[in-house]
Length: 108
Image 1 (cartoon, rainbow, N blue to C red):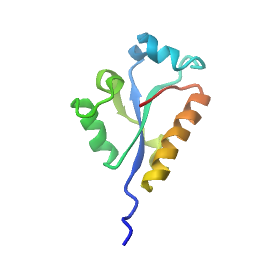
Image 2: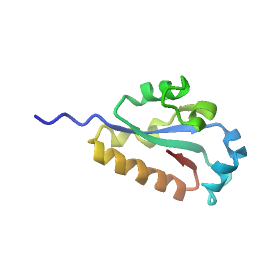
Image 3: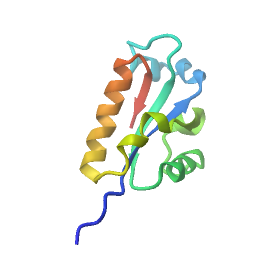
């Protein structure tokens, strides 16, 4: 019996100070002033649980650990839940879409 889809994409808002990190700036040459800075990820956990783990330093992305503010469910809720491969693809696609819209984006 196949497992029900339980993977999620998620988007975390990062504080503006992330723009001071040269590595983040280099990854976002098309950033549009005033747009949000975000981290895009995927997980087999509930996005709220995953965000809490990032902030606790558990399998954390450094940008989320240092600059993560809150989840932005309006940018991802409509896609969840989904199968693992779909979530992997959607993570990349969502990052590309947000970057094309001028967001500052980081993906692991």
